[in-house]
Length: 202
Image 1: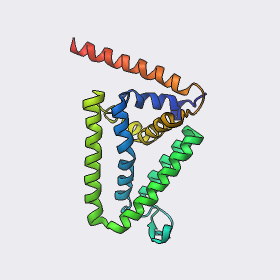
Image 2: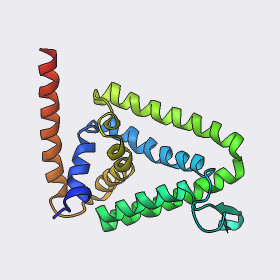
Image 3: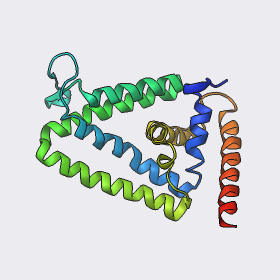
């Protein structure tokens, strides 16, 4: 059984899935969602430390990285905890990927410096968001989820594409019947949206 309320994975997944039912659009999101999170963390690296020491030096593979417990870390922690609460197995993998993104983005930000980092982030974000809007406009033919629920769309996007990839590659589902339940909810939501759209036209 799925959790209710805030951690109702079926509800969140169905909401996001209703905006991403076209296979090409889903693939585009698989390519661009995690890079958007990664480059956002690059920019957030330059926010001040919220607690603890100004930075902690970390040396993976012989290169020095300054890890800062700032808004980038806080965002990573929130995402990681939410994903684990949604589903322990896939959520733990998603949380691990979030922390890899945080460490990797800190490393890149350290090397680039702010004056170059914001330009790289801007270019990457423009490219990724353009790709996603093309996915919605050309293939999905429906506005992105973020226009209806900004927080839910941003929070669910990385986990949604990871779950999609796990389902495609190894038929993973958080619990038995999850995908069947979600598909029924997505189909119902899309029918309701199409009916509203038709009503507006007529």
